[in-house]
Each structure stands twice: as structure tokens, then as C-alpha cells.
Image (cartoon, rainbow, N blue to C red; front, side, top):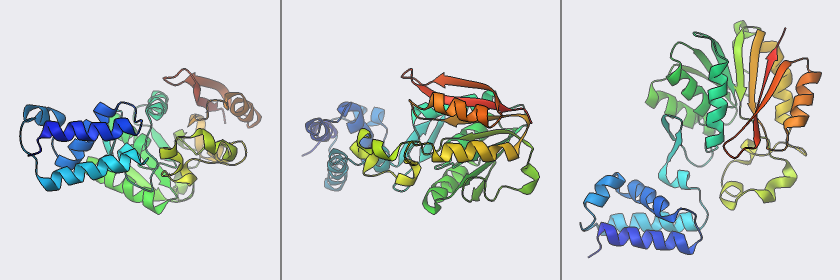
Amino acid sequence: MTTVADLLREVRGILEEAGIDNATREAEWLLEAATSKQTSEMIAASDQEISEMTAHRALKLASRRAAGEPLQYLTGVAGFRYLQLKVGPGVFIPRPETELVAARAMSRLPDGGSLADIGTGSGAIALAVATERPHARVWATERSPIAMEWARRNRDELDAAVTLIRGNLFEGLPAELEGALDVVVSNPPYVADADAHLLGEDVRDHEPHEALFAGLEGLLLVEVIASEARRWLRDGGWLVMEIGYDQANKVADLLARLDYSDVDVSQDLAHKDRIVEARWPG
């Protein structure tokens, strides 16, 4: 007989042997995915026998995680601020650092203001804004059909007021938004092509490369977004972007050349320069 406690130990052992950090907590999350029960429920029933099918499902998830698949793809869920977003292969997994980007964007957004999230992926930033600032008008664009499907699923499940547009960067935004947006926000690809080796295998081998890499210096999309945002921002509107840890000076110089003002760089939870904000004076 295999109990919940037995299975949890076995899953944890597989993860520990693979060198997975925080193996105990990840084992609990994988069991939650396999059993559709919360950890607290499983702890309360730790001596309860578990079905062979459920045990097989949990061990298969553990083996896939040990082989390098991202945890969030296996559980199907990624936490982002106050949201639980559905994710899976083909969409970039939201990161804790990006929660700060969403917060900065909201701090620049007047009540009832308008915001466009460029390259929304799973919809994380746009959905956070729409749910936390319900009077805001929010648009989000995404080029990838796979990522767009995840964004739609998340929007529909949250019943969030976000207009999703399938298009590359600013493509597809309504013409009436030109010169009218209060905030343009983006977490664009910003990893330099040559820095692929610096990423973890679970990221490099599984997450979509078009959401990660952006040319020789990683600034290809940052430059395009910063340039094109000027057409869409109102006078005094704000551009908020996530950037690479070593890109702050180059991006600040770029924004100055593009005639932005009040350029500000803030740090992430690891005290690395990660968020750039700039005002479009018009």
C-alpha cells in the first residue's frame, strides 16, 4: 500500500537526487497537480492510501521535473502578484521580478487611465493591472499564437477587462490610441544571444526563445519599443520596461537620445537594475 506520505517522500527523493532546489516544496506542488488537492488536505490525510494511477501520475511529473522541465509547465500554474495564471509549453513563465514592473506601471497610471502591455505573453502584466485597477482601460498585444491562447484563457477565467490583440509589438492597436496612452509597459526579450549559456537548462531548453533572446546585446526589442512608444504615448505619458541586469546605462542613454525625460532605473528583489521608466514630454 502506498500512502500520501510515502508518495511525497518518493517524489521528494527524485527531486533531491536531481539537485532541485527546494525539493520539499516542489514535491508538494507536484502532488497537488497530480491529486487536485491542496497540500493541507494531503497532510491531513497523509496515512491515506493513494491510487496506483495517481501515484504513477505524480512520479511521472517528478521524473519530468528531474529531467529539467519547468515546474510551472508541469503544474500548469504560475503565481503573479494576486493571480494564479495558467501556463504551459510555448508561453514565457511570469517571473517575480516582473511583478515589480507591473507595480511601477500601475504607479504611473492615473485613475481611469489607459495602458498597453506590449508582448503580453500569458497576460501577466495586463491582467494584474486590470484586476487591481478595475477602472483602467487595458490593451495587450502578443505575436505568438500559442502565447495569445494562454493569455485568452487567463483573461476569460479572470473575467478581466483586457482587450487582447494578436499582433507584433504595437501592431493592431486602435488608431485612436495614438498619442493617447498614459502608460506603455513591456517585459520584452532582453537576453543577448551570446548569453544563452547563462540561463538555466529549464529556461533555455523549454521556454520559447522568441520570448528570451533579442540580438547581439539583447536590446533589439527594447530599442524598437522605446522608439515606437513615442507615437502612442500622450504628452507626459510613461514608458515602463523590464531590462537585463547589465543594460541600465545603455537603455538610459537610448531613452535620452530618443528625447524621453525623467529616466529612472529601479532594482529587483536581488538588488539588480531591472526596471526602467521614462516620461514622454511630447
